[in-house]
Image (cartoon, rainbow, N blue to C red):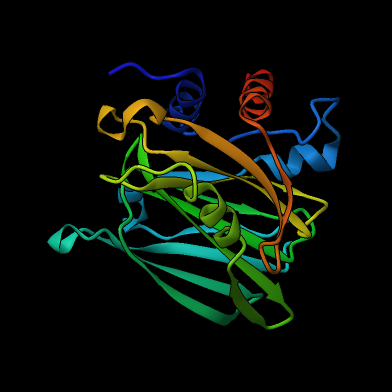
Length: 225
């Protein structure tokens, strides 16, 4: 199977277990931008043991664990703590090859991304807002996913949804939708388009062209070394 340039970048970063590093404008990387590009990653089966991912301000922590592949449905458990106090609990399903979690630099939100298949997908994203002792799930990626699917989709497998990096602390999120990168998805296999969306409601702030999206993927490679 032949991968296009965009998908080769996606596959390499995921297989190497490194969360994407993207710039909205490919200029110098500020310290806060760099922090927003780095995330925690693990294979799904590693969640048989608990893993703690603290927020940047150390006030909150997410604990991922409870992994079980009984009936091959890849279940897990995500708990959110404020100090010693449990403030939210979420059941996870369809965890497979990789699991990523990335806190926003201001510690007011985080996203969880995982593959329900292998290195090529299918990737899913859930976004959470943390306010005091309450955690709410947001639909940050839905509008971008729907916009992409209007003109680009794989009838056999669907599309990948990928979270890239935080922008302006937790105000905005850079995401990407991608046609599943296998030959049964036709001539658009692996096509990816990036979107900058408003975190709270998913409103599209900027839609990138294919060439702009390809450049975003290329730009991040120099920060991976």
